[in-house]
Image 1 (tube, rainbow, N blue to C red):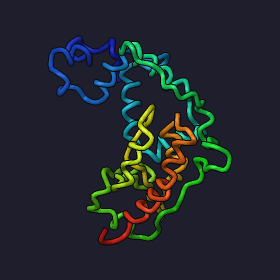
Image 2 (image 1 turned 60 degrees about the horizontal axis):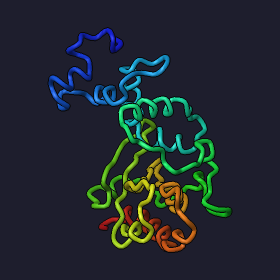
Image 3 (image 1 turned 120 degrees about the vertical axis):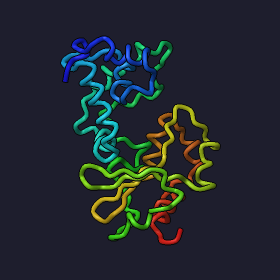
Image 4 (image 1 turned 90 degrees about the vertical axis):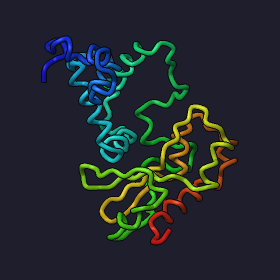
Amino acid sequence: MKKIAELYKKDKPREKLISKGVEALKNEELMAVLIGSGVQGNDVRKLSKEIISVLNAGLDGVSLETLSQKKYDKNIPMAILKKIKANFEGLINSKDKLKYQMLSNYQFMIGMPRYEDMIEVAMGSDLLKNIQGKSQVVFQQKLPNGAILFGMQFREPTQKFPYQIGTNNAVLLPYPVLIKEKKAYIMNPKYYISIMYPLLKMSQFMAISTIPGAILKEAQSVFRKGR
């Protein structure tokens, strides 16, 4: 792959964006424009392609491993973050102070679940068939290891719990469900909520005390036929 400096000017991502518009750029070219330049040992084109590859790899191959922090290199995202911040004035850090290395053993409090405390919600040879056409399934991705990841949208009234505790510093995404080797798993809802809400207080957690159980029931029900 040619380095950015070796391309003709008209083929460089930033110049291409100006002359042809965003529709003409590939994902890695848009990422290159966003980052601006590479980091030591990685040209911006190579780095951008690697980032897009990581984003496309799926939760089981990347995000779950990232959360466990067993093979996670903090220097890579920090270098990328530095480049992004340089292109967006006023971008501020999250208030979350939890270190990356602590996530695999993180607990909201003593006695609460950790990352490894996954919950099996269904088993059988027809799990994938059972979720097809369900309105709760908002995306579905086959992973390189053959597992299936899908995002589950909550039903009412479960989906309204953010109104009770707010969305301060929160990350709210479709709930990830993993189908692997004829079994389906979810992160323990208590763990998942605590990392999605890094500033959550005990009083707020108590206000939604029924939600973890509701999430578990929804994850189980999505695999039932005819629902």
